[in-house]
Length: 395
Ligand code: MLT
Image 1 (spheres, protein in one colour):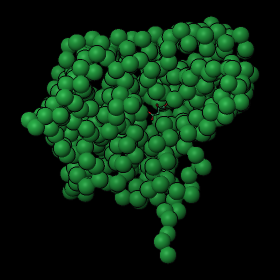
Image 2 (tube, rainbow, N blue to C red):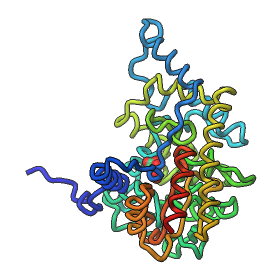
Image 3 (cartoon, rainbow, N blue to C red):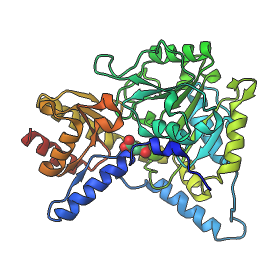
């Protein structure tokens, strides 16, 4: 008799954003005359910038010719894109990451989830609470559910958890943070890197939101921290940076200096990708490469500014009516305390029914998110303004 992976039964019945989508769909079906404003899932709304559109179009035209046709590509990504990533995102910022340490993928979500393949199920895993659910759920799926140690992120510790007294082996960190929008300083991250190096632990660093950092001195990469190349893996995404949520492209950096039990994690990841992944489409990688041109950069910075302006507007509006707000300065998320001590889901329902706004309930990211709601800044500005006016009116 075939048997299932029983660890799946340890998961909550539904993935957070699927559960929210279901609730919203139900509301829309019952209230067709009440259009909702979506500030829930962090999905971008600005169109792909012209420079990328041109590059993808040209690449598709190439594919229609004998000379320009591309079949299976390298599983690790085309050299043209890995070179651009290495130069622009690392070397030009004083970080020595070479192209064979970069693995192009279909996004940070997949890589954050798949990275567990190269680690033993015995590892003790430190995961923030609240947290992007992918780290938690994929560790449960992989059989590490009982080995998870939750790091409480609370208002008291500024949502920056201390290093636990109990020893941990794998540490998931995300900065700028999803969902709280807070950032970790260099000094703060240095403590984790030192801990990891001293304890042969590995930091799994999600920097999908690095392009939203606005303040000087805030690290965008874990590799800005001294010693990180011997203890950290970094996940990056073009989803939020360049509006690629529907195009699917990102990358993961596994330094060659990262050695565990005499084995290079770079080789293990390479082996894993070679077996289970067939690479990102050529045309998408050509689009991603266009991001690094001067014009491409200029165009996408406009979009990032647009989203950051939404975040600023939401933060200021919510604060002006006395709500307590975090994030929204170096991140596209505004993390807000619910009014009148409502639970996160109570306020979610209230916002949906009374204001026709979709937000994300903080408790969906873990118990420590209870009493908070997350607003995404990836919406349309005019709609965001309407949404904030409705929040104010209905306090
Ligand atoms: C979020 O809303 O937390 C993210 O957009 C989800 C994701 O990137 O998968």
